Image 1 (tube, rainbow, N blue to C red):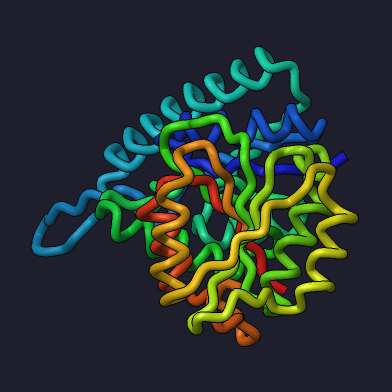
Image 2 (cartoon, one colour):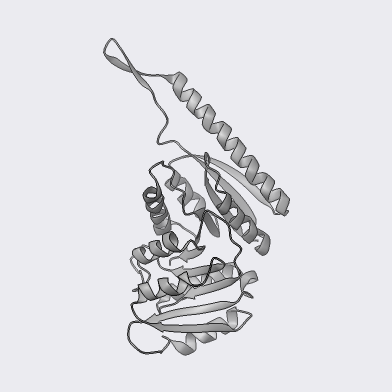
Length: 278
């Protein structure tokens, strides 16, 4: 049995993130843990002044914490009901602290972390969510599946490959974790900056995929700027594809899968993206 964690801001229920995590847990017979995080960095303190000295209004703090607790209870109830309706095994953790630190700790004990790309634990908009996701992807101790806000079923796998150990590692990790999904139609996507149609380590990668995937893999080798060409191809795959890619934010980063490219795939294409690093 595998352990999947679905991460939530305890005050904002991410319905799309929950549905992706629940569907994957059901398909792979995994334990799903809903991790609801209460951000303790910004406890709402109200300052007033008495005799020119500041003091903390503890009544305001208590009211704010009570309101957050009510929201958390409601969101946990929604998550629990959705899991029970699907008939999957699940647990709930309510963590209090610094969100990134709490999720990194949880990721040490999980096989996969699922998170909505809009999650940020701030009210500063999409830029803040992008920054939070980038930090999480850089340091997570397990693979991360970033998902769009609105759930779409997935019926195709796109394996992004540039010949690097990092891209191969991501393909292997996805296979190890989710062999139940290996029967989906699968495309291995590679891009050459030159006009060559050569697939890097052609024999080795094909041998690997023959062992891992139940159906024949469609090999697509394109030419052009690697980043833009991949973005263009992925944008034409519709909303029902899942993207698998490697190397994010570590010293052994591959030549293709830089942070900027990963961010573009996550933010622009609105597809579920499985990312892992060695």
